[in-house]
Structure formats: C-alpha cells, structure tokens
Image (tube, rainbow, N blue to C red; front, side, top):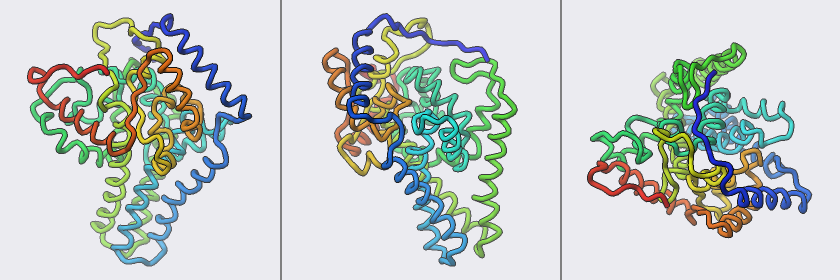
Length: 369
C-alpha cells in the first residue's frame, strides 16, 4: 500500500533524544531489569482475564437471577476495558514479551473481546503513534462526527453541545467497534497516510474468524443457554459494553485532548518543526501518576508520554522511568504535560470539549501549551 507522510525534522533536538534514550537504557541495565513484563504484570494479566471470564461463566451456569447477572455483566465491562489497557495494548506493541509468538497470542485477546488486532496495529500503532494530534491523519481524532476533538477539525452547530453529550458518545465506543468500526476501516481505500490499501488473506481470515467466534460465544451461546428473554439478554450485553466503552473512551481522550498538548494539521505542511520524539512530548499528557489503583488498572494509559516515547517497553515500568523523562525534558526546556489526579484530567477534558465546541469565530485559538 502507498503511504503519504508528514515528515519530522530529526536534525533538531538530537541532544534531548540521545540523552533520554541513554538514561532510560541505563536504568534497566543498572537495575538488571528486562524491558518486558515481570511477575506483577503476569499476575495482573490473570486478574484482568478473570474479571471478564469468571463473571461470564457465572452468568451462563451460576443460576443467578437477572439482577445478579446484570451486575456480573457490569463487572465484565470493567474487565474488558482492563484487558484492553493492560494485556492487548502491551502485546500489540510488542512490549509484553521479547517473544513475538507470546505477543501475538496475547494480542489476540483484543480479537477475543470483539475488536480487530490487525486493524488496531495500523490505526493505533502506526498512524496514531507516528502522527499524534495531526488532524486529517490521526484516526483517534475522528471518534465520531458528533465530536470535535481538534481545533483544526470542521465545526458544526451541534458541537457547541458536545461537552454535555460527549461522555455518552464514548459509552458506545466498544459497541461501535464490535459491530461497525472494523468493517468501516476495511472498506476504506485510504486510511490516514495509507493509500490504496490492500489486505492479506491471512489477516482477513483472522479478523472474520475471530469476529464470528466473538459473536458466537458472547451472543449466540448465552441466548441458547440462558432461560431469559432476548431483550433481557440485550440489556445485559449493552450494559456491559456501555461500561467498557465509557471507561476506554474517557481514558484514551485524557492523553491528548486536554489542556496543554498541541494540535496540528497536515494541510500545507511537508515538514513538522520538531523531531518526532519532541512532537510526542508536545502532543501528549499524563495523569494520576501517583494513584496506585489507576496505575494498576489502566496500565500505560496514564503514562502516555512514556508510552509514546517507548512503546516497546512494558507499561509496568512506566512509573519508574517517568521521573527520568520529566527530568530530562525539564533540562532541555521541553514541556511535560500532566495532571496530578484523574479527576483534574477529566475536568480538563470537559473544558476542552466545551472550548472546541465553541464556534471558531467566537473564541480565540486553543493555546498550544
């Protein structure tokens, strides 16, 4: 497939890039640590999978009433989001293990939960991580036409209300993903910088095979086994996805669509002004770095700066290296965006939704930093 790119000036900020990589490498060497998963990560992997499949089997064979099954479905939603944050995300970046086969099979947990790992690696690993917050290329800025997530995006009248309905839109993200998003991407000839896309039959076989498997064990089997009406099942299924979708949707937006990170457009630009590493620093934000529960549950998502700079390092190590990244950034005069708490970050995203929803003529441009 052909690729149209936005270039980055890698002649600039060489000292920052070199020093940062050397100091992070030194941390692992001096402490004799692998950059991949450790025992804590393996334990978390088991816990996240259990949070999805223990409730699943209890719903099928536990003989519970409808209200108890609804509660278990909500727990599954929390587990689905957690698996995406911790297991699938790291594995698909090649960060979970040094063994590609291990990463491949753990990456299929993404497909097991209804989404395509193959398309995710294109839209997220390649496009989003390379062209972060560049409107017109970064697919993460195109969540829904109902949302305006960049000051460079087109504005429509209904966007002025997006700070009221935005979080509700996020709730539908996994439902859309399971039933429409992946198929939509497959039908597009151009995807971000990629033009005239063609897909290998092996990737398509995995995508459709896993989709059918998901529909089978998540929808068909429960309808055959459970002695409930179809609409009672539908309520539980949708509630599970609304829970997972809200958590996933909000957490992903806290990394880039908050006050501080810059936004750019690809139109009329052949060269970005910064080296890629610096561009990632300027377009990404962290949150709740000292909250142990948040750090455990969302994996590397609240350490998005470290994740964007070092996507092949397992997320379990990000809290330790974040101090190094912040210190080196300060020494070189490069911004390190972060919000101390989860709530402060959510409030910042709310304010950004409101600001981006205001008609451009009625407000000043969103500040870069």
